[in-house]
Amino acid sequence: MFTCMTHSPAETAQLAELVGKKIHEGTVLCLVGDLGAGKTLFVQSLARTLGVEGEVTSPTFNLMNIYEGICPIYHFDLYRLETEEELEDIGFYEYTDEPEGIVVIEWPDKFPDSLPEDYVEVHIERIPGDETGRQITVSSIGEEYEPFVKELEKLVYLSH
Ligand code: ADP
Ligand code: MG
Image (cartoon, rainbow, N blue to C red; front, side):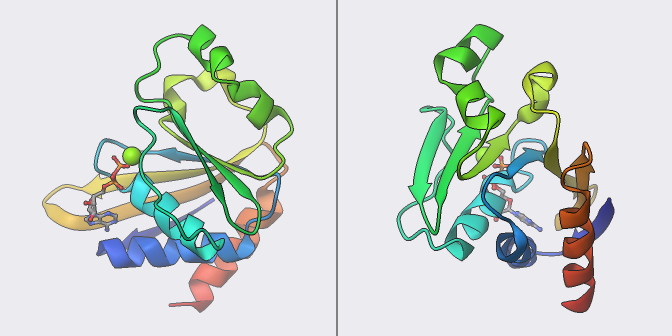
C-alpha cells in the first residue's frame, strides 16, 4: 500500500497514466471516493493510456460502459444501484469473476460483499481547505496484486 498527494486534476491523470502503463488484462480496479473526488477523471486518463480514443464518461445512468483499447475496459458505476440483485442483472459477476479485459468500478464500497477476493483499490480523498488537493492511496486487497502495487509504487517514486 502506498499513498501520494496530487495537487491538480493533471497530477491525478498522471498517476492514472502510470497505472495504465503497469496494469494488465484480468485486473479489477476499484475506485473509492466521494462525489467529485476524481474517480471518473482517473478512469478517463487510464483509458486514454490504454489506447481508448472515444468518449469516456461516468456510466452513472447506464451502469456500465465498455471501451475498446489495447484490451476491453469495463467501466462500472454502482452509485445508482440499490440491490445486489441489480448487480446480477447487469452481469456484474460475469465480468469480475474471471475478468477478460480490465474492470474498473466506481463506488465499489456500496457492495462490499459483492467484490472479488482480489483487486486493486484506489482511494481518492479530498483535502479539507484545498480545492484541488487529493490524497490517493493505492492498495492490494488480497494477495494477487501485491507485486503490481509494489511495482507501481516504485514507478510513482521514480517519476517524481
Ligand atoms: P467522481 O467520478 O469521483 O465523482 P469526477 O472525476 O467526475 O469525480 O470529478 C472530479 C472533479 O474534481 C473534476 O472536475 C476535476 O477537475 C476536479 N479536481 C480538482 N482537483 C483534482 C485532483 N487533484 N484530482 C482529480 N480531480 C480534481
Ligand atoms: Mg464518477
